[in-house]
Length: 247
Image (tube, rainbow, N blue to C red; front, side, top):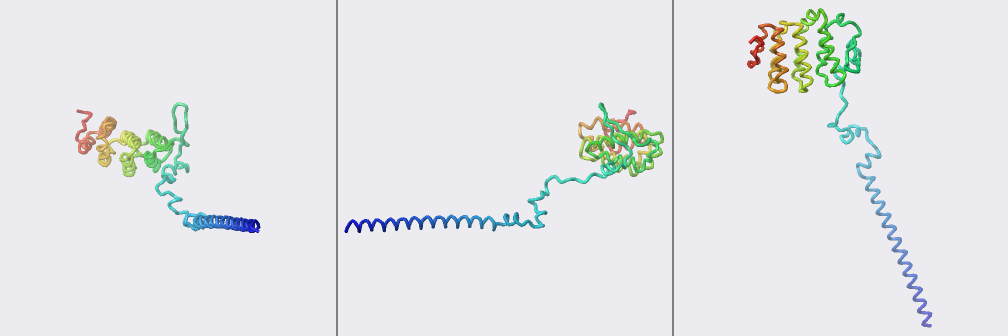
């Protein structure tokens, strides 16, 4: 009788233990499911997740999508646009030793207005091939036989464009502007004197930079040479330290 009661007690304890184990296991599973649902709910309910799932039209302008401080594509400059559209009647020819320009027609037959001014505007370019085309095109156009007659009437419009190159922050642009000024002086001579004051201020500021002292001094000597004694008075009024080529 005692054995039967013992065995019955053991069975009851085993059943109770099994029931407890199943209850514990079921409780753990429910807990895991609840945690997973909670995580899933928190993820899907977050603004970022909602935005990804259902993007709004305004997201295209979101600063996170478009960086306003990043490098944005720039519109082509006026000179680059004109060159690309065939508005400048010459093209760059790449040579094995050096480049050259190929004109669509003889430069002597081309009107200077507005071609010479457009080429002068291109002196401010900093990318190839525009740098070469503008510099070489300006030089070659001034070499034509009747260049003085064509260039002198354009001086009031041409000088401000050259000044823009002379005040440019890039050294290479300044150098191209200085070279173009000397070339123009050789063509128009004393006719440039009336516009010198507008240009000499820029040269005076750059003259304080040691690396430009020699090229600017050389340019001033050429301006005096082509402009005569009247140009010397103008140069000295703006740059008192200048020494005349005649002294």
